[in-house]
Length: 246
Image (cartoon, rainbow, N blue to C red; front, side):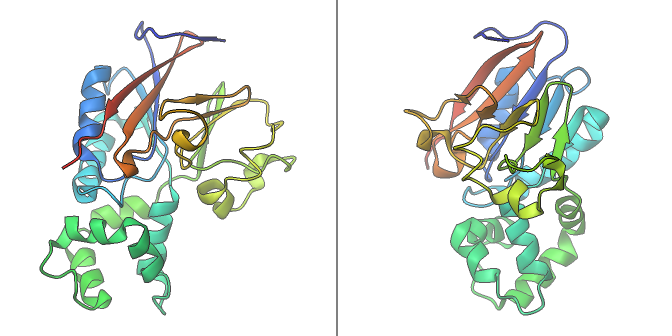
């Protein structure tokens, strides 16, 4: 395989991860890619929500893309979607604080505004369940992984020591870092993943290429950049947009 800096022939596979409520960066990236829902195959690798200001708008737009692109789009689950579901579905609400500490407060604001942010969580939950049932249903039905001819797609990684990588726990698929990042795996395909900002893996926020794995999280949740990895004609290219501050 070749790593090239050219884009576009006939059919493309596009991989994007960790949008984190950065709606404007996401739509700008799709425009820069000249994304064509009827022609391109788009894989979104989770963490659509939290930290950024427009999680509501991101999910609403993903629902529109789901209708437009049909089978040409795949949605994976990230750890931030997992935290939101835990906050909503655990009766004792013990996980609400963890979610809020990791960007959930910004997500809540995008749904109900500033006025109700200090309300008891059961009131917040009731308002979102009432007004956005389609958003919650979408999040509940996200996939943990996808496999293509040449790639394994996950949010965080796989267990490199499992004989059958598909037998890993949900926690592995959406949360893992070590030992996945430090070990070569034997799954037979390149793993494309997000979750770990590439700025922590090499000198900048660009896509991180390794022999058996490719990290694409450009740190949009930390106001860095949003990356797209393109795979076309057995070659890779990348396109990125900065996340505007303010």
